[in-house]
Image (cartoon, rainbow, N blue to C red):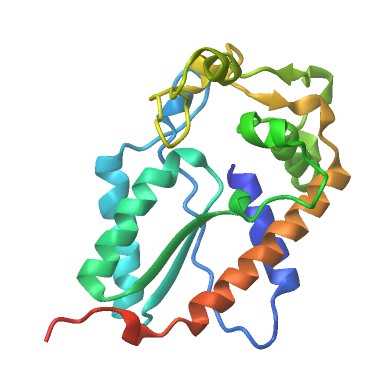
Length: 223
């Protein structure tokens, strides 16, 4: 996930428009990843560490006179923490704060099936393609297969219960597949990864334009 984040930021530098002014903070490489507790070598901080740490970073941004902040994420385990941090910064510093993920900008039309987009949330076709584009030396395609998610069984047998919103079962990666991976990694290619990267970064730039245009006067300030 860190490799994906840094790869996206490198592409952001390539696509950076001359008329859009923004700064990029250092990547926070260790987040909340206890859903991978059984993955050897996984590193994780708890929310009791991350919330004050990331809030402190945002506070320093505010102290420098910057009132708009976009927190962009490449790891699903960080989502809840980011939401709390964003609200804290809004309340404490009257900041415009937006939290998002690279994957929320979608994929090139027709490239990834609806089924894979729904279930291939970790190490599937999309992430394998991105890693083949960014860091191919780390990918073992001889190990790639279709890692079927148990979320498919849940959807077939339950009316509401799934690992994702709106009614989310608390899960770890190995609950969804004993390998700790879900999605069809065998379909990943570097060419798809390059196209997905360009597409998502282009969407992110449009979000930055929206944030730049958003008036600070829209924030409620008590009299």
